[in-house]
Image (cartoon, rainbow, N blue to C red; front, side, top):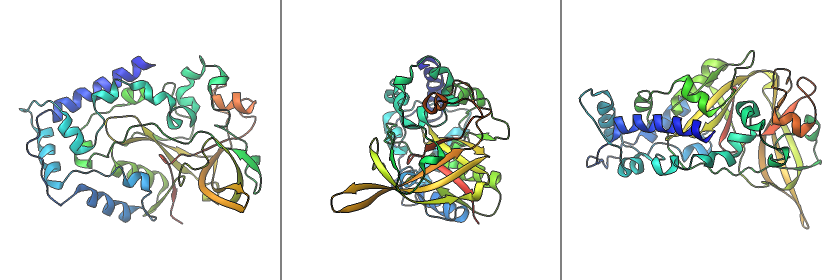
Amino acid sequence: MATNYSHLFTSLWFFLNLFFCFSITFASSSSSAISSDQIKFWFENVENKMPNPLLKKLSPLSQKDCDYYSNLLLSKNSIFSADANFCALAKLACTSVFQKANIVKDTYTREKTYGRFSAALHRHQDIKNEDPFAFYRLSALKEGKLVHLPHLKESLPDRAFLPQQMASKIPLNYDAIARIFPDSDTIQGETESCPKSLEEMVGFAKSTLGGKKVVALTTKNTRGSNSAVRIGKIKEYGGGKKIVACHEAFLPFAAYFCHSLSSTRLYAVDVVVDRETGSNVVNTMLGICHMDTSQWPKDHVAFKILKFGPGEGEACHWFTQLDLAWIADE
């Protein structure tokens, strides 16, 4: 598995080297930041405010820097060599991070969300290596019930989105993405996308769900991670309609793997920690239940944890702060 990651990272780093590699003496201090355009785009297309984890991923580049580098991307006569200065300027994760590609193995997003993407790994792993609280049944979502949350804290390095005009120049084909998500055959009725920018992710959600605007949902924070909590108030979203789920991919820049989902139920769940002085809501978790598991592989980790087979029951899991669920604006 590490070899597959290495191939992808080597390929992506080659293109970044090809496009960006030079000693940055140009870096502008212009106040016309790309992040302003990204925020504007968000509010033109998304009904609610941007979650804090995404705010931290907005590009730090100025418009002048972006225009300069974009022109270099289009130049056929330029040969560059990416250096630490550019990576710091654009807030990218560079070669030193890629040399430790196994960092992804321990992240909730990579291993605990949709096990079918890593089925090849799970076939060779003992159930003891899996978080026993990664999946749960719908019956667990009852106010007052005691549940144990899985590990919610991510270990992916911080990266920013590239500006759309730059991200669109980065080649990222299906074969490359397949190396990230082994055995990622599309489930019947599902649509997949690998957006390389904030704009592409929002665009995929809008085109899939329809309407002028969409709503972005995620888990509020990491409090309650790997501990026993009590279920508080529960709110269902979407009424069983199609949703789009996006999970962060480990690439040099902020990018996501997104797919549309049917036969699902989406919930915002308050989780409560009991204290001597009373009860305290410490988090609002986003939970999703896949009501039809008949097309999931029989060795999916969810079946090992929940102890049933494909089509014999629903499988639910929590979203982290780095996961996003998109629904149509009603």
